[in-house]
Length: 202
Length: 96
Image (cartoon, rainbow over all chains, first blue to last red):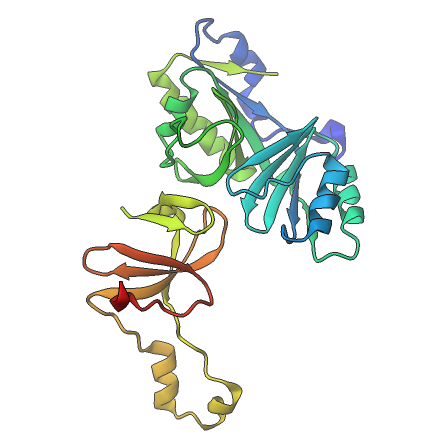
């Protein structure tokens, strides 16, 4: 991990703070970046109670063993990626500690822990029109009867590989490779012309 | 566009998947390899069924869970008749 004062977010060059100040007040969709979130890739056997127990001991959350689901405990958010693959996400800066704790907890197990925080950034999308905006570039059925809060899916969005994590009824986290984030941000810029959109800089 | 049911993630769009060609081609054992002729090697390496009808093939959910699985697909209608895990023998579809 680079020194904190050297750390640039993947979308920093768009000047989100300045753009946010000029955003319309009556926006129906908000877009922003949740930069530097700790992402640790965890692989193991979900049929092994010791593996589930180790994850629970470190994060306090139950491993989301059901496909396309997430779980949350405090600041930790766990995402299902595949039948033996998960992400544990946590606030920025905690990746080293989190990876070390998980690795320690998996001692003696057939499991793997890899810090992948630097590979991705998160584009946050929220507001009443957020689902409509996503549907412009994504073939998933995002209707609430199929896809709702607590669900996640790896898919393609405007030809970029992404993971879509639905936080609540109208907000989504979109995990995208940093090298695709510039392109995806500009794609959102094009789509937003058809909506009343605002940039949110937190 | 095909709608393929990934055995892990559920139904997803075709563009999330990559095609892995014909399934159930067994690699010759070490013993067989000692005595195989060039023609038999060529048969193993290059000769594929290419049927007009039901084809057993491998797919990988490359943009999703990255798992491999088998699909029985009709090459004319594109109907996906069955999706089944790797390692399972080809289903006997006559009994359907």
